[in-house]
Amino acid sequence: MSPRPPAPPKIRIRGLEKRFGPKPVLRGLDLDVPEGRSLVVIGGSGSGKSVLIKCILGLLKPDAGSIRIDGTELVGASRATLEAARRKVGMLFQGAALFDSLPVWENVAFGLLARRLVDRKRARERAIATLARVGLGPEAADLYPAELSGGMQKRVGLARAIAAEPEILFFDEPTTGLDPIMADVINELIRTLVSELGATALSITHDMASVRKIADRVAMLYEGRIIWEGPVERLDDSGDPYVDQFVHGRATGPIKVGV
Image (cartoon, rainbow, N blue to C red; front, side, top):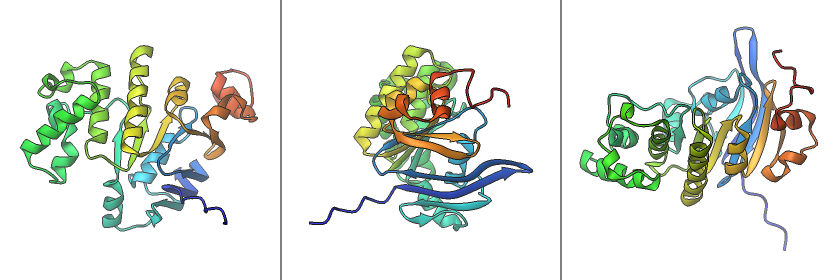
């Protein structure tokens, strides 16, 4: 019996380019995100990690290249095609990005209400059930973001990301601004929820503790390209001097600080 061919990636990116004026940010980036796996993209500040996610979501228009989700091309796609792809995605934004004027339950149910998937009564019930999945009780539902600690805001942002049970989850610097203990709590939640949903996850971070906790695979972004990609178990034995310097936070090496 011939071996089964590998499953196509959930997200496939080829030759992705994006510049802002004369400054190139992404320079022919190639990346595959396997279905049902958690891939974390690492790289320094300003390396283009957030630009990559914005291009996938269609929030930025690439200058060249291909982005496919489930085989559907998104670069140059119609609004309807982009909207269909976005409906597969949940996202935890850096800083949680909650709506200050809405109570917690409406923040969590925002996507459900905006797409009119459920009525308000059912949306509130769904929000409270989802809050429970991230360790928050029903008493949090009617609070406002300003009444929450940073860790609670991250939990609410995570609940909003998973409320519609998406096929794909994006995490943008999920532990920024949190103390080490709360960061570990959020990382544990991310790992558990991605597994429970059977979702494909793409995260961007420079927090190596977070990488080691939530990643199945890791890709290093440097000067607009993926220069190394492999299983998280290989992170300390990558054989790449750029990855080695970044992972261990060394000031000396091929990555020039401040350049």
